[in-house]
Image (cartoon, rainbow, N blue to C red; front, top):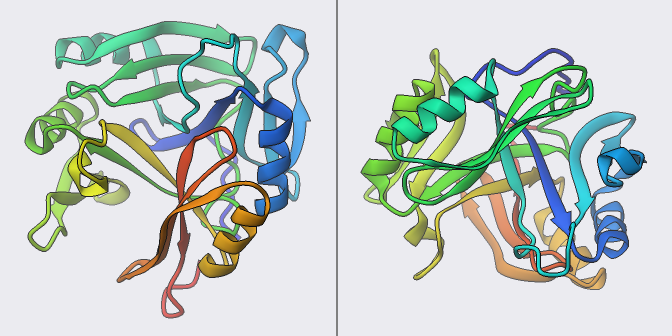
Length: 259
């Protein structure tokens, strides 16, 4: 069971969360789908709930702050040692700062930014909260990938900001793994691979034991299957739409590469 209790290295996906219009319904959906239990913060934290498996943090869900809030979407947060300094590098590389660095009590410091192609992601400078504790375990975070509007421009941006290097695995498609100090930490690809007209975004994958069963359960719970399970060398994938309209992917690891 992969568990991490210390801070994630800078540039590594460290956390994911979702702001939901239907807060209670969304929590119930993921509790039913992944077995999540919730630890809810007080009013000073907007009721934000930390999802846990076996007491270990795996994701966050918060209530949307207004009815005209942006559409619900899973946000990937990249670890940083200094959120304000990283935000400065982001603007220098052609990105934008949507929400400047803000301290969240003793938990850490966050910011919300875009890459140079418009894809939204977060920054997390850890305090008491380091990020996900449990990963690559059913119900936990399995993978994150930047789906960018311009493949080369996106790679140039992230290399400039975080020092990423890349390994092309697209086999004719615009897709690469992202490496930091020789360790694979995420992926990057053209947003067009996700469908014509799909805007740039960071995509979140959760690990599951059985992709087909998870798709059936998601439908039973009020979600929808956006893309039926498909086979890859990295396992069986599927795309699911949650009850608030958010999309995420699931990954059932292949037998020769158990989770």
